[in-house]
Structures are given as C-alpha cells and as structure tokens.
Length: 197
Image: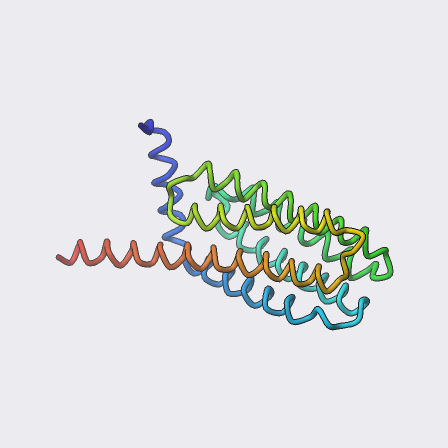
C-alpha cells in the first residue's frame, strides 16, 4: 500500500512528463540519431572514430544538459545533469586527446555506462510504476551489461566495438524517452476525451 507522499510524488512526476512531452520526444530523437551514427562509424580509422565518438558524446551531453535545465523540478533532474556532465567530460577527452591510449578511453566509456546504468536502474525503481519506468529499467540494465562487457573485453576491445556498444546504449535511451513521451501524449488525449465526454 502506497502512502500519501509516494502517490503525490508519482502524480507530480507524471504531470511534469505530460507537460514536457516535446522535450522528451526531441531528446529521444537526438539519442536515436546519435545511436545510429555511432553504430555506423565502426569501420572508420581509430583516430577518426575516437573523435567521432567524442563529438557524439558532446552532442548527447549538451542535448541532455539543455533538457535538464529546461525542466529542473522533475525527479530525474540530478540523474540527467550527472549523465550530461559525464558525457561532456568524456567527449572532450576523446576529441582533444585522440592519441591517448584506447584502453584508457574505453575504460572511461565503461565507467560512464556502468554509472549511467546504476543511476537509471535506481531511478526506475524509485518511480515505479510511473509511466515509462520499465523502459528506464531496461535502459539501465542494458547500460550495466554493456559497461561490464567492455570491462571484460578491455584488452581485446577495438574501437569499433566501443562505438557499436555506445550506439546501442544511445538507441535504447532514445527508445525509452520516445516511449515515455508517447505514453504521456496518450494519457493527455484520454484525459481530453474524458473531459469532452
């Protein structure tokens, strides 16, 4: 049985999502496109791939940062800001230090995926059963799995594997955000039909 505070938090979170479906849709599309781009780059030379992934991370971090500060009161604000900062830092390192060891950069990406996976999983469990919590949980668990996979294969990881795994993570993050926005839009339509009827 849920207490009054939990119900109030869930209701507030749902209302915030419904009021910002445009942001979630836009960010979901950005992550989907970045995921597709990251998956398309594996055959590029090592240096080019490091720079390309760095730019993708900077774009993803910037987009998520803008989204974070445009709706600062929603429950996922701190998670969103933290992931944005991690993506920006990692992206800048990859762009400005492309000759750094591939293993070091791969370890940073593994850390990003692991931390992001933990944060998304915890967030999903905290807001359960608010709309989209299941997609957040799947996205978090996938990030954890990809991060662990990179760590286990660190010595054998080539940058095309890194780009592929990052692309998969971006794709699932985009799907989660689009699913959240779509569900929220459907709830709004159902409410409007109820008021009209």
